[in-house]
Structures are given as structure tokens and as C-alpha cells.
Image (tube, rainbow, N blue to C red; front, side):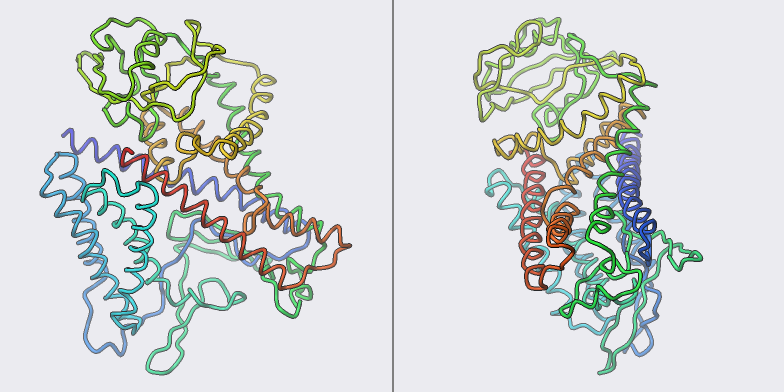
Amino acid sequence: MNSLHTLATYAQSGLIFMVVITVLVAVHELGHFWVARALGMHVDSFAVMMGGLRKTDLTPGLPRPMMASRLVAMVYVAAAALTAFAGIEGWAPLYLVGLAILTFVMPVWVCLRIGALYRMSAADSLGILGKTAAVALIILAFGTRMKGLTPDNIMAVLFFASLIGILIVYYQPVVHKPEDAPMGEGHLVIDGEERPVQFRPLLSRRDKHGTEYSFLLLPLGGFAAIKGMHPKPDGSETKIEQGFYSKSAFARFLVLFAGPLFSMLFGMILLVGLFTAVGVEEPVNEARIGAVLPGKPAERAGLKAGDRVLRVKGESVQTWFDIVSRVRDHGDQPLSLEVLRGKETLTIVATPEVDAQPSPVLGPDLEPTKELRKQAKLGAIMPSIPKPISVGEATKLAASMPLRIVISLAGVVKEPSRAKDELGGPAAIATQTRQAAEQGLGSVIFLAAMLSLSLGVMNLLPVPPLDGGQMVVAFVEMLRGGKRLSIQIQQTVQTVGMFLVAALFVSIIALDINRFIGK
């Protein structure tokens, strides 16, 4: 029953994670949508989530019948359930077998099946799978320097890479479609003839303005497709009626800014409501674990929020400062902690991590002193209790959060070594969601609010294709009296921006891998 409870907990956390991300992106895109509409731009579609289901039947003409996709999906789910259950029970051989099936057998089978349906050669469909695996291994090597890796570490990374590879193969008909083609419309060349292939939403409807509202398949965000957003070599995008580029540079600047603005306003609204209804967390100097940071020694050792620490290195502790003072000079050697979890007393051994850079030493009042030195840390956070505040105080505090995020990002740029502690990708967010779900609705709302603020701030970075980068282009055009930049300059800026965003993405994923493998 304990294993089933654990599986249910992870399933619940996964659902919460998908709902939170989907809502936050939908709010962001709603900003673009509303302002574009208000400024006279036509929005072709507003979609929640990404991707769609292929509606075009491609089975006619196949040399032999194929197994029903539902049966393939059932085998996939059964293999995933077996792997998860074996991992929770600690059945290592069965876990590795299940992971190998998910990582190698199923992806190859599914890609060959889709490839046959699309009349692709085995080399082409498996080549895509191989490329995603190669990229994953490169990121893995970058993040860990190939130290301390185990077979299940490698297969776990390749498993997620295989899912991406399968999606790329599945959406091949729309990968190379023209930029101005209708959403979800693609094509394949079958027996020398071009054949249209259509992907459709799970649910959709069209309003009187011609905008399609749709609910798609994959919990990977969403989008607002504004008419005429793709620059043309001849500059004809400026002639498209109700198009994005047919409006002034200032109007485009406002549309681009609306997305990050809505994200930050939504995050602040959530925080104001949370702070006034529940309160602001105020630290309590008790020998109790308030929370554990993802991938840190405390989490890896099995410490959990709510654990009361009784002894550290065999010495009794009464306050959080007692814990800090005994851990910080211990170095990176195994450390024994005796904790009370419910009615059970446990002995947990954790190996602290020593700061790469000196940090302020805390005094008995838990305030930073002027002394700086490298300290050993477990990655646990002291407990806190909610303290109610007024609406005015809550608004002031919530409004300061975006600035705090900016200051934190600036600190990471100044000291890149802080990135491993302050930046995280999808895996870190998923872990934080699980921890928040265990702590209650208030923690989930707080996490959603901070993610929404972070989404707004990150999108203001002056790097195309992020909103901030496109805003810079629009601002430059405003300074030029509305004159468009040449297509060559636009393409160069876009290419450089894409490279920088890709580098940032790879770095964050590498941090995720590094953090969760435990390096």
C-alpha cells in the first residue's frame, strides 16, 4: 500500500505541475491576445497547451496492417508502471529491465511504426531518435563531466530524450510547413505525391472574429498566433491587413510587453491574496526542517519537511542555530543526524556540500555577521509560521518580488557559481511542485506566483526570440521613425538570439541533471 501511495503522490504532483505551467503560460499569452485585439490586430488562434492529434488517416496504401495505437499505448503505460513500481520497491534488476524497455525498445518500436505510417525509411525515423539521444548525452556530459554516473542515471536521461524524439517524428508533417500556413496543417510526400496532413486540437471553437480557441494535447505551454508575425524578404508583412507588422512599432512594443506584464500582474495578485488570507512566512528558530532544496544533501539523504532534529553528530540540538553551528564547520564528510518523524525516531546520514565561495556566517540571532568563510551546508531551510499582514503591506511586498528576482539574476551573472543554487529547469520545478503539494494549497499558490513572476522577468531579457528581444527591435524601429530594419539584420539578430536562448536552455538542463544525479 505504501508503494501505491507513493505512486499516487507522484501522479498528483505531476498533474499539479502540468496545471500550474499550463495556467501560467495561458495567462502570459492572454496578455498578448487581449492587447493585440485592442490595437486592431487579428489573432488567428489562441491555444492552451501545444501540439494536436493527427486526424488524417494514413493507413490506406500500407503494405500490411498495423497494430492499433491504443494497444501500443497500453504496452507503454504498463512498462512505465512496472518501472515506477520496481523503483519504489527497490527491485533494482526489474527496475533496470523496465527502464531499458522504456528507453530503447518502446521508442524504437513507436518510431518505426510512425515512420512506416509516414512512409519514412527506418534510417530516417531512427536517425531522429539517435540525434535526440546524442544531444542528451552531450548535455549529460556537460552537466556531470561524466563523473559518478550509473547505468540508471544514463538511461533515465535517454528515456526523456526518447520522448522528445518520438514527438519530433510524430509531428514531421508540420515540422517544415510554411510559416504562414494555417495552424495544424502539414503535408507528406507519399508515392511521389504531396498529401495534406491535418493535426487538430482536442477541443476547439471559433468566434465571430475568426479566432479559433483550442485545447491541445501536450502540457508544454500555449500560444496566441497573431496574423502576419513572420517577416518577409520583400517586406510584404507590413501590407497584411490587421497584421502584426502592419501596425506601428509602438503598437507592436505594447503587444510584446503585454505578455510579461500579465505574468507579473498575475503573480502579484496571487501573492497579495495569499499574504492577506494566509500570511507571510516568518522564520522560527526551532530544530525542525522547514523544507529541503531539490537535489541537495538533505533531500538525497531522505530528510523531509517537518522532521524534528534531535541530535547532530550525537550532540543534542534545540534551535536552528544549533544545527547550523554544528554543520557549517563539518566539511564534506558524512554527518549523522537523529530526527523525529511523527512518532518514529530515525538516524539519517547526510554528506554536506561546502560552499564554492565564502558566505556570511550567521550569528546566534540568525542574522548575517561580517565574517565570511566557506561553510558546509545540507540544503535545508529553517521552519516558519505564517504571519497575517494588511492588504497594503501585502501589495507592497508582492510588488517588490520582481525586483528581487532581477537582483538574484544579476547576482548569478556576476557570480556564475551561484547558478547551481538559484537556477533550475523543468526537473527542479517538478520537484518543487511535489514538495509544495505535500505542504498544502498555500505552498502551491506561492510556487505558482513565483513561477509567474519569473516567467515575466525572464521574457523581458533583451534576447530574441524572447519578448524582451523583440521589444528591443521594435524600440529601435521607433527611434528610426517606424522604419523597419532590413531582413538581413532581423535574421542575424534572430539567429544570435536563438543561439543564446539554446545555450541558456542547455545550461539549465545541465544544472538539473547535475543537481539530481547528486554532483
